[in-house]
Figure 1 (cartoon, rainbow, N blue to C red):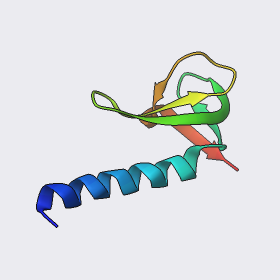
Figure 2 (cartoon, helix red, strand yellow; figure 1 turned 120 degrees about the vertical axis):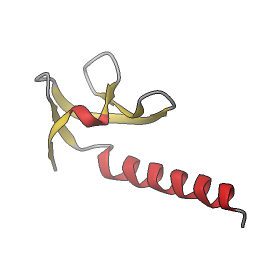
Figure 3 (cartoon, one colour; figure 1 turned 90 degrees about the horizontal axis):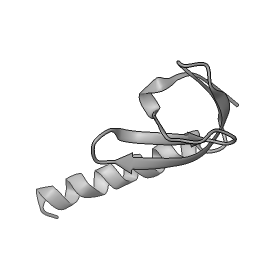
Figure 4 (tube, helix red, strand yellow; figure 1 turned 45 degrees about the horizontal axis):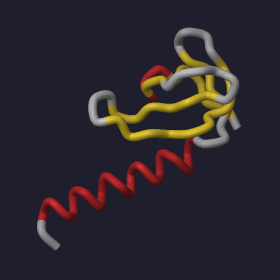
Length: 69
């Protein structure tokens, strides 16, 4: 497999792993918002972003302060 295809496949594998690790987990963000991760997106400008049930918006995964369950 050419190098670019291998790298692309690795990115998709890591994205799927991040989804399975985060979706359904309770999180607290650095700004104090808390709730259950509803979805995970791969944003070309910001990297991984999450949405939290009950809150409008998407936040960078780097703003997670605490992960539970």
